[in-house]
Image (tube, rainbow, N blue to C red; front, top):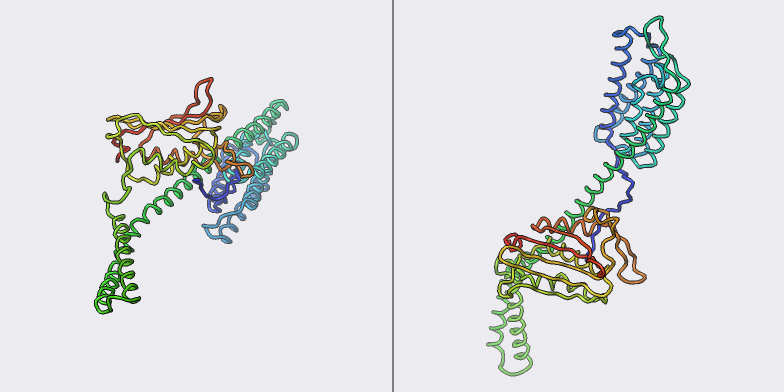
Length: 433
């Protein structure tokens, strides 16, 4: 059975956040707060309580400087500390808004920023906690806040209905943007992990394919001492009496030396491009190799070939293609009730391979997402065996086969039949290359 081992994935996105990223974002926020407060006070000549606002901004500056001096730029912050820093940013922003009009302040939408950063980098529960903190602060600001800075001698008060509407907009913005940012970041993490797993599988298969070269090198290195053994055995045979146990042992030694030479000759040929045994595999042999490991699970596997046998296409022994085809056959065997059919057809331009089973077919709810990482409906092969899986197998198979030039189509058998069908088609030139 072909399996893939990758780092465990729990779907929580427990990626650590780089401290340098947080510090830079907070410097941008501090600069924006200073420009807004000083611009409104001196540019628009509105009465802003600078004696309270500037110390709040100063606290953020001190925290940022402390982080910069305490930790190196490459430091990565664990989720708990990152959430604490983002929570501090929410509370500091709420305090500034309290001093400058509460939710009547047009900058109240900045509550979204810390939650969005958390959604892309921290676990969902921490993002939820930060979202609730932001909503709680916004709720308090609907009723308790200092007046919005306005022209001297004039009071500006928005209707409570409008303020409640602002509160709802902040709530919906936090919910929608938080969930959306988390989903986008989570899909990027899943795809990155799956691609890394693909590269690991391909590297492993390529490593196995390189063993023939190592065997050839070992054969060449062993050739010289073996020749010396053969020469000494020949001289001993000449010097020893023609009859007796010693002569029999020497003849046995020479026969074993000749056998070793034959074995080393085969191993040495593995490193010769174009001459290596099975360096190129006819399509029937390729199908037999990928299906043979799956014939012992009570499922009949049949192969049908449509095309002139003397013109059957052959492919180089490609580890990626072997793994990809093997995984598709394995999936068909896992879900089949009693049989799996493999049909191969070829002509001068194309090579087509169709793998079908008589199982339940592809579920309609995941049909459109098949081929994406972490989409799986795998069942155990036998009672008592663990089922499930990471859902990486078909993703890796699809990626490797598409690299070889294959176009992949998925379908279910038309009623009244049942079962899944995977159709692969290569340009013949790409398949044989």
